[in-house]
Length: 113
Image (cartoon, rainbow, N blue to C red; front, side):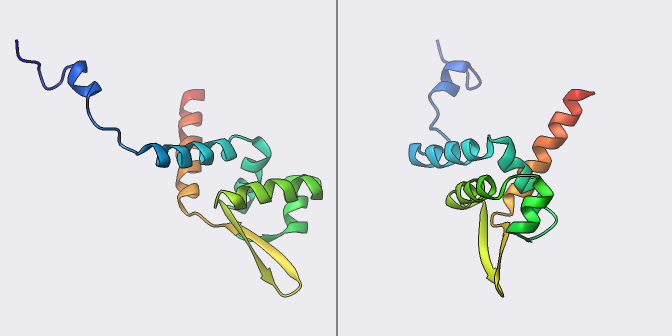
């Protein structure tokens, strides 16, 4: 008997969308985004770059904790630090994070209704 193209058996045989190495990169990105304080930092940076002092005040995070969290976000390419005079500004490095956060926030709001 021929197998229909839309059967679950034929779908199970298709090649994965992402190679294993790329899946690991995506998983790391989601892990780094899975910490509420990091999401608070990203949410705060959505309106633009801020100095570390301003970011600490806006997020309510202690300077040492903020620095650790920004380092983790920076390591995964989510944010970048750049010198601006004598201060260091932090800004979102990956524009796709804006889209991802908006998408997830919309979905959460819709489910809450």
